[in-house]
Image 1 (cartoon, rainbow, N blue to C red):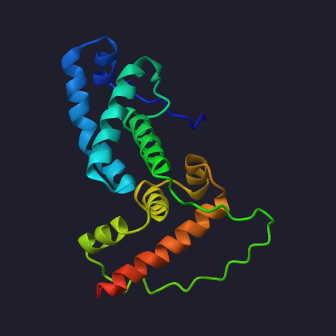
Image 2: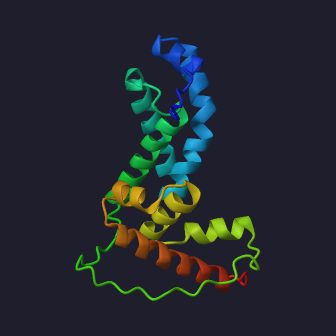
Length: 185
């Protein structure tokens, strides 16, 4: 039994490929809010997120004939948005310090707070994430909110897996400290 699934062709995407102008607007409206929010979580700037989203749609529409249903259109578009968002951070000279690659990294076991007992308000968490430095926020957003694994994040950001792991641990600690300062932890 073969376990691969063929993705169903999206009628709206197919109409866009045929040049049907109203379909472009419908496709845009279908994904614009989710793509904007994805970018905003990474770049933490509404104007930059808007620019990323617009550029991503332009690129996607220009390359629509290259889209071949290896994933859903939404997943394909999201990858474009994430890559463009990371490029914005790179332009800001995102400071991710590479760890030395000598293999002698002994990371202490982190103390895990009783996360189930801590009930954070969603807005407080969003606010705390937005206050993280660019590098931390990018790693946290890609890992926790976008569902990428640490190896994928390393590839997207062009850094080592150890650096991603370190950035994530530090970001999580900083996030908890920000929440404690707000009286929520």
